Image 1: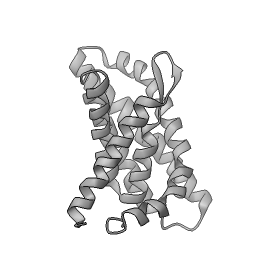
Image 2: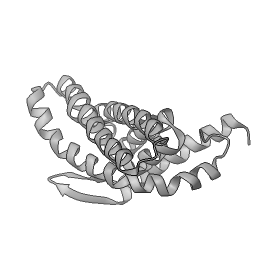
Image 3: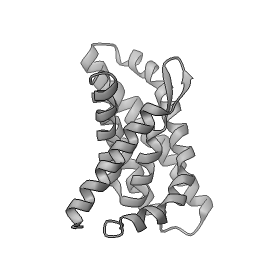
Image 4: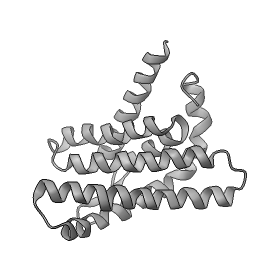
Length: 178
């Protein structure tokens, strides 16, 4: 299979997995917020295949999910927030993969998850939704605190999955692994 075809297949599989896990396995935490298991897929893609792959899976996975479930309601802020989260995670994972100290690696990855979610959810998603829906920014931030907590927890829980899946993912798509 050519590298371009393999890359498209890799992205499509990740996007479909993100949407499927987000749809099929919803674990409620607060009000109408749930732990989005699709974030585990995004984290694995950021870790094993790089920043661009993680961003594509996270943002386009949200678009697919929203098309299937709610006709794009809520999508723009969530998708843009995932671009930021994917960027922060992808860059951090690339740096920490080379580190020898597991404690430092874990601490930096957890800090990146928290910072990425804060920037992506509390800032980008809140500002986008504030502009789209005409609500005060403080109200949107207040509503998005639940999503921030749920997404941060899911991504932190996903960190060991990234380590476990890395070799398997790279073997499956050996030409794309970096």
